[in-house]
Image (cartoon, rainbow over all chains, first blue to last red; front, top):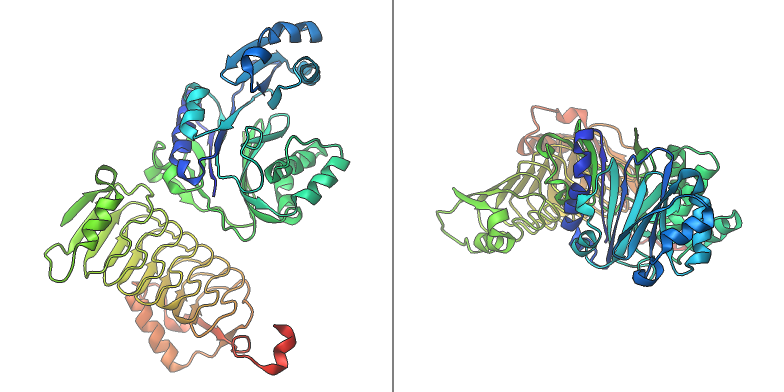
Length: 298
Length: 229
C-alpha cells in the first residue's frame, strides 16, 4: 500500500496553513502504511540562503555546537534550528555543497535529508500523527509540500528508508508501489556518478529523475522517461523548487486522486485525504491517467 | 427515510443496521450523509431497500449487493459494486478502477467515466457507463454485458469468455481473443433495453454501437495451439 498526499498552493493566502493542511491529509492516510512517515515542505525562504536538513540518531551529541563547528569549517555564518532528531542548517546558498562536505567530516553519523534553497524534509519511523507532531509540521508555512506514509516492501523500516527521498538540490520524490529493475538502474546511475544512501527501490526512482534533471532535461521529460526505463508499479509524486509533478505507471494499479481549485492542486492516494480541503465540494476532482505526466510549476 | 450520519455514527453501525433489514420492513429508504470517501459503505446489503449516499465513497462501496438499489451522489473509489449479486447501483460521478469486478448479477450504472479494469472477470452483471472506460476492461469477462457510451482504453476484453461488450466510441485496442462482431437484431433489442435500464436511452441509440466478443480461440483448448499456451 503506502499513502501519498501532496499540495501545491496557487493562493498565497493559504501558505501559512500548508503544514497544517498536509498534516491533516497525511494522518487520514495512516492505515495505508503505519511503518514510517515523512514530509517535504517547500518555502520561498530568504534570498541567497540555502538549507541543509540533517538527521541524527543521537541529536544531543551530534547537534551540540554543530553550528559553530560548521561556521569554522566553511568560514561563513551558519544558523541552526534543532527539531527533535532533525536540524535545519541555514548557510549562504553558494555554500551548500561546501557545508555538506564539511558536515561529512565533522559529524560522520549525521544524515542529510535534503539540501536546497526551499526544501526541508522530516522523516522518521512511526505513525504520521507522531512524526508530524515531533517536527511540528502543522506550524510550517510553505508554497508546496508532499507527504508519505509507508508500508515497507522492498527494504528495511528505517529512517533512511522512509520517504520522501531527496537526491538532488530542492528535489524530492515519494512512491507508492515497487520497482523491479532498481538494482540494474542503480548500477547504471552509480556509473554515471550518482550516490545512494540505501538499498531502497524508491531512492533509485528519485535518483533516476535527479540524474535526468542534472543532464538538462525538463521535469516533464524526466517524468516521461520513468515510463520507459523503470519497471514495476509506481505512482510517483515529485517536488522541485518551483514545481510539483505526478506520474503513474501504465498498469496504474496504485491509486491516485487529484483535485484542483483556483487556490490549490492537491493529490491523495484516496479521496479521503482531500475531503477537508477548502472548497473540495466544488473542486475539479479526477483520477490521473496511466502513463501520463502531470506537472505544475509556478 | 432513515438518515445515517456516517461521520457521527460510524461504518459498522451503518452496515449492521442495513444487514438487519430483512423480509418485510418499513425501513425501505435510507440516506447516508458525510461519506467523505469512507471504505465499504453499504457492503453486503441483502434487502430490497433504496440507499442514497450523499457524497463520494472510497473502496468497495455496495460490494456483494443483493436486491438493494444504491445511489452514490458523487464519485466512487476502487471496486464499487464488486461481486454484486443483484439489485442496482448508480454512480452519478466517476468510478475508480475495477468497478463491478466479478459481478454475478444486477445492474451497475456509472454516469461519469470508469477507470481501468471496469468489469474485470464479470460473471453476469450488466454495466452501463455513460462516459469512457480505462484499460484492461472486461478482462476475462465470463457473462453479462458491458455497455460504454464513450471510448474504451487499451486491451478491451482480453482473454474474454462469453460477456457481451458494446462500445459507442473508439476502442484504443482489443485484447487477446477479443474481436468485433456483427450486431444482429437480438443485440439491438438487448442494447435498447440496457440503455433504458441504465438511464441512457436519451443519450445514445443502439445503432450507434459496435459489438465485441470472444473469438473463442483462447479458452477452447485446441491441440493445434498447444505451442502457444
